[in-house]
Length: 263
Image 1 (tube, rainbow, N blue to C red):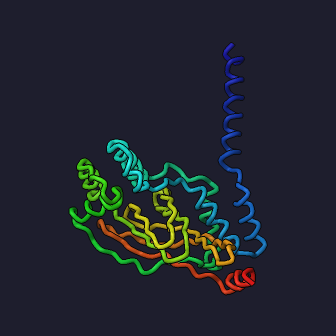
Image 2 (image 1 turned 90 degrees about the vertical axis):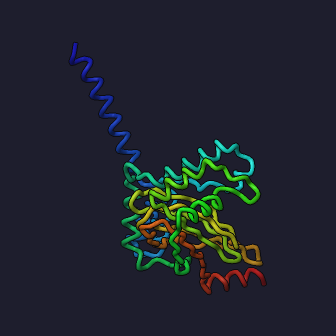
Image 3 (image 1 turned 180 degrees about the vertical axis):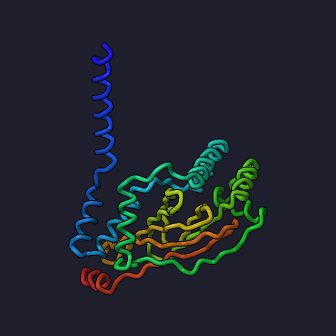
């Protein structure tokens, strides 16, 4: 009797393990394309595709939209902010095989990658607790929105945890898709950075990877998108305000093609 019960259980476990192995180890189409490009010697395209896999597949959260403070109830806004801060402060339990393989692929092909996007030299300013709270309010409360005093304890706790504020500015014409990835926790924060605008992200001390892709619309109405570009940035050990600017260099060939479309 025991054997008749045990055999179906073993079969179910084996099947479940097989499905788990299949779904956690299968490669996405982009990952397969990246591997094929690398094997064929097109390391530049392989690098961009590996970066795309990481951008899309790394566990990430959308940064809170400051404009939601205009209509959300204070308790709901605070809950959203707390969820975001908890996300960036907590490490992932594991990293998916595809993501680990894509990170390794990026490392192998990095010397051949096209650096369409760069950042200016970051300006770092250490913050006092009062300055930290002021910056916190600028991050989560839009102009003319009353400050919720209960955020003081939340801000203070993250000051003690030594979270810094990374402010990324953009130049004219270019819109950026950004994923700021903590290379230790393997968690990211995603956002869209519009032209002549800025985004504000909270980050732990240590090494981070800014994965970004820029988009521009030429006068011909042709749309150009850059390769995914990984930019490494080090966050200091003490709570700071780090300010930088994303910049894009459009290759001459792309400009010529856009000009031709205008003729």
